[in-house]
Length: 402
Length: 156
Image 1 (cartoon, one colour):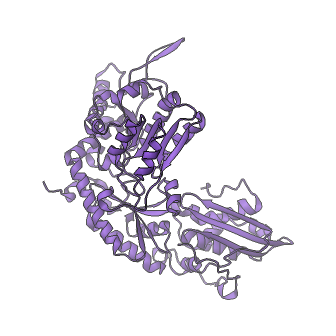
Image 2: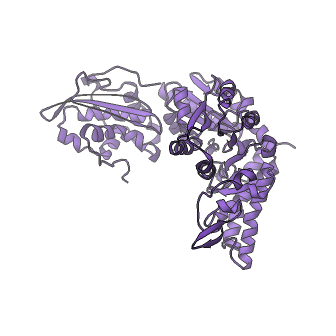
Image 3: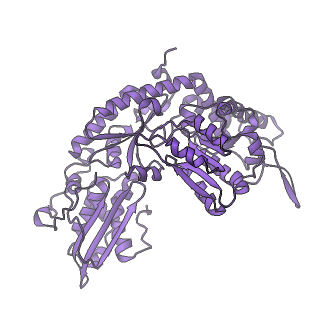
């Protein structure tokens, strides 16, 4: 079946504004189906879940819980008990750092990260390491932005307790060899967390085949609303973790003398959760399943190849990262003599939205010795013509700054 | 990448403020002539040998850096240089600020507001670029005079 990008774009009301949106790695747009699913909840059966003994609450609970089954299918998890709702990737990683790390990590233990990581996969570990007296080590990259596997192998020989890395780099687009890295880390006895913030929307994952212990991602980067995400956790590991947030819903019984927690995953879901957003995320899973993740990936690869080719014809422009076949739909670049923020401002005048800055990956920016890059990122709705408009804008910026 | 480095103009006459009207706020004018000239030919760029006051700040969000050296005598700013790197807005804003304060009294310099800085820039600054535009003023206020409570960036 042909990939019909115009038909897809028709599902996204925001494109009626004329925006050329090349910032989907930051947050994606949402199709009508996702917005309608949330509207339906608010207008037809709005109520709290899991506790009302009336019909609306039952319908709301059913819709809310159906997202868990969709996430299980999307990830190929063994059970819906392995699917924890979160606000997003950041909360998922913090949940692991707190619930697993505080309980199981000891002084002197090693956590292995990579220089490609987003701040959300750095700062929770820094806090944990400081608290526990644990060590952090970083896997470096080669000149093309690939993780140095020789160095990773050497770090694994030091028997880390945890290895945490991104499936796809948000700043450079590098698709890491996550299956191989996970297998090697597991063989070395480490737990493995994969940051799927960029991987889930653009490639998906089979958590059983890969064998990671945790996989954290956000709904808002994969056509869903803000405020809802998923943490996959291998059940055996989740069972051995302490709660993260405490309060209502995450308990079984509360007495003055003490509390028995609910079973996983409810144990990690305290308070009233973002019900509408979780329902919206369910619709996003449906939408992506309808397209097929392999088609999504193929379309992005086509856009990325097209963009890299077009950018290579612009003088005084440096692209960071590996060739298209090894990267997600992300292209980071730098135009000589024009700061990324100035470029973004000029592109904005061409109705083109790109990201400019450090992409929440300052250690990587330090490693590349740049203060900021411009980043264009693509998704299911991106068209070649949009990339052409961006190139025109870059050339305009070069004329202005000449 | 960086501003054409190490070319202190010494605030010479031909680089002084023209006295002409700043460009209109039309989009067309954005980044043209006025700002770009200050970006490419920064006034008072470089370092002073023995500054009375010297301070530097950065904006980690985009990596802009601005530092200002002042030579102050009898309450008058006799000489000023700035250094740094970053976007056109941050560097042009610093260049314009040095022109404004050179020869001024400290008291007058203290009174410079963010509105003054925006007026000097003469273009509409979007919310995302406010920090770039005000970085040099922050250096001047917070650093040089230790006005730690200056909250110009955060104010509406």
